Amino acid sequence: MIVPESRPKWLAAAVPALLMLLLAPLALKRLGHLPQTPPVTQAAAMLPTPVWAPAAAGPATELPHINAARAMQYVREVVAFGPRPIGSEAHRKLEAYLLGHLKGATIEHDDFTAATPDGNFPIHNIIAKFSGTKAGAVVIATHYDTLMRVKDFVGANDGGSGTGLLLELANQLRGAKRSGYSAWLVWLDGEESVRQWSATDSLYGSRHLAEKWQKDGTINQVKAFLLADMIGDADLNIDRDQNSTAWLEDLVYEAAGKLGYQSHFFARSLPMEDDHLPFAKAGVAVADLIDFDYGYNNVFWHTTQDTLDKLSPKSLEITGDVLLETVRLLDQK
Ligand SMILES: [Zn+2]
Image (cartoon, rainbow, N blue to C red; front, top):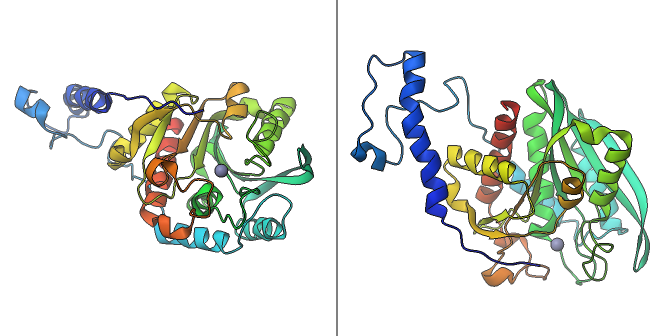
């Protein structure tokens, strides 16, 4: 499923930087902020950022900044429910916990029964909608179920990290109407396979929601689908996903660059199978933000080693800020 590929990261970083150097004097000239634009010399081109360049998005724009400690506290509380596989009591408690933290948002439910190799299970996707001024919506999704077949698996990173992070994103989106697309936060259920990962035994929630949105036309409102999965690893290396939409991945990288977080993004390129695939098949632009290098050689993944001590609030902050900045860049498109 995974084919690592090397990628000339310096090139990806150098091209936007050079473009900025070339374009910044033009922007300054138009705005008239400086009487003279200094010439772009070779020495200047070697500097990481030109000191005389304003923030590309203008002075009115503030970069997003989530409350990382609060996000981490949510992850702790989610993990404290214990293993949260579909159909379990802890899963039901987590559903109530999520809904309790989403008061004030417009909530939609996508509930159904999934036929799995181990029988029928209830699946509950939870959608929280925050309206914007622009027609269309940007989705930020994660999954909140945990792997069933590994005993005592608590999924601090795989299931927990995204679930807690999205609760903090809800805090950031709550209140004043967004000037941009509507933002829909989606806690997908039944991501994990029951027995063994296959096209039919996996992605139960996302396959159902993508189909439902295709049937009722909602899919046409979705401008982009951003997925956060396994993003709490203290050693955060978000992979570039070959199954995601290239321009949207580029936009995520641009957002990471604005925040100074490029070093945590896209050192490696892999094809990921995750909750974004059903939406990609439905024609939506998708980007999966996932760090599939959890411990050396991903050794903690799907094991009882996936525990809170491996996570860092900083990683939640990096991912959360980059997601919100990506949404802002999408608003401007
Ligand atoms: Zn998993």
